[in-house]
Image (cartoon, one colour):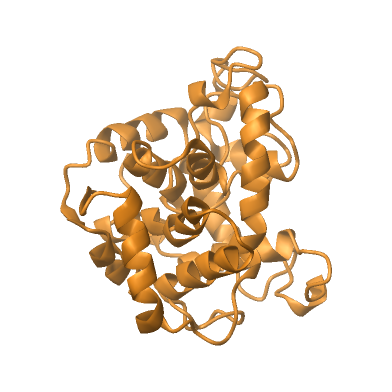
Length: 287
């Protein structure tokens, strides 16, 4: 399928989605929802248009195509710090909640985790969790990189944001994919379920040989809000998924609510994080 520039342009920045997630899932004792951009009637239509494209084009066949295209990891090989430099190009100057680049967001997330005394692999997960967004720098449209993730190959849940946009998705009219279980078996386990394509799955596949399983669940499913907030896909989870999702729930607040207006002291923190990265990951990663 060929995508025109008009179709891949409407989301100004990946932060548009992240800001929207905070609106939909505010933490207790944080700013009132009214203090954020109104979700039902936003001043800007970028988020709504983002999900229109995401829900239209994230089909089972599209996911399989992207898996075949990117999971060979044959595009480049580089130190992880070069990837962080790439992420510094992903900045949204219009974001009302933070003017920080992606690298600084990752540092704020990992520092909040470290301050609470979690294991070092948990801290590293905070540092890494959005690194898969380098997909944007390989020319991928933003609706194929960020956004709430969901299973493909079965019926789309009404708990997914803007479910009405799935009407334009051909899978919703395909009898193979439009039933509750679709191509899957009851409680088959998420390891047997294909998720919509994006930075979560890409980074999971990149790091799956290096990190503890709870870290990998956090990376792979931190955008799966229909499940870890709404429990919409309990019928696909097995007991092991339910156990591991407790880690996803622990991680989520650090991702969404660690943004502060003051940037972290990058140079002062680098020695700690360079040693931490070296403890778990190879000198170079394949992208």
